[in-house]
Amino acid sequence: MNVNYAFFERIDGPYSAFKDKLIQFGVKIYTIDDFKNIFDLNIEIKKSGGSDFQGIDLVVLELNTANQRLEENYILNSIEEWKISAIYSCVKNYRNSVIVLDPDDFDKIIESLEECGDITLQDRRMLSLKALYRVLRYTSLIHKEMSELFASEKFETLILEEKTPLRYGENPQQLAYLSKIAKTKAFFDILDEDTLFTLSYNNIIDIYTALSLLRYLDYRFAVRVHHGVIAEVKRSNFNFKDSRGVLAANFLSKELLKGLDGNDLDIVILPDFPDYPDLKIKKFIKIKEIPNLEIEKEYRFLEGNFLVQTPDDLLNMRFLSDEFDVQYKFVNLIVALSKSMACCIFKDYEMISLGSGQAEQIEALEVALMKAKKYPSSLDGAICAFDGPIRDLKIPDLIIGSGIKTVIEPGGVKEDKNIRKKLEENGIELVFSGRRRYKI
Image (spheres, helix red, strand yellow):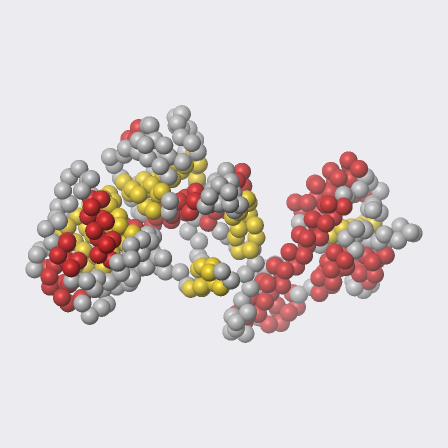
């Protein structure tokens, strides 16, 4: 195994520097201009490894993975079949002919040549696998574009790209890693691989839940999430002593920093300001901004099946009410991002309590009211929101007399009239959001 002859599709930018270094090792460089028929490249690749030391030993290509127009001729003409053919020829002859599709691999190849005068067999294998993955992704993207063009999604293909391994899964004995749909922007692109590697499966879920809620809150809030459950949403009265889980805030203040004294939080996420005092926390993460991606589809994996749906629009919530309190939006966001059934009690820009994950709506309310007893003041004037329409006439009975002033729920069921009558007779406003937001 050695490198005597290399083919370069491009010789500009980083390709030029790589080409010049190979020339220093005595490698002869060929380009497209050296072939009357570019498919003859396959013949030269197959010669590599012969006794006469002829043939192309290294092939450097670039796969175009982004079409700009959704037109049949444009898409078909953009398919460079000679490249796919050359890649397969290299993979088939990987021991003698190296295929390179990623400029990030240039330095590794030069280091290998400097150390041993050749590219190691393991590197050749890994580069072949990487090339096959690129071809798979390339084919999938072309298929996706043609599916859109031909109005067919029957054979939609998802290609997952592993981003980084995680510290462990839901439990320490489980392996886990973070992946994303190939060639797409993803939420956790905000964190580098070194940071992600130190996180667990549950850390990832808690961080996502906390930041997802923060991204929709227009005011300065601190959100704490533990085991996937929203535990606190505060604008003041910060006291996180002995608290667990992930805390994320979209602002920084002396009051907030003081509230972090004596905490037992797993992770604290704060804005990327230049200087911070010495925070005594297990893990501290700075972020510049919370991503707000335009996601076309949501996927949920169920042992070989995927449930697919378009995402809900949490930004543009409307409430059927004569008066609008911005807190309606905040409390509705909390139940929308909580496990159903969900019931949240909110007052003075702070989450008082949350009942979620119960089988019945009335049980969620009972949990929320029970947790609210720990709140230092009364619930007078509080807002109570549900993620689903109220059907149980016992629910107003629990709310009446609690101090709750406003109830928010989707409505749209036959019980609406009776629920409204019972609440309004007792001075409680009923506001319809018009959309249920179950999250299982």
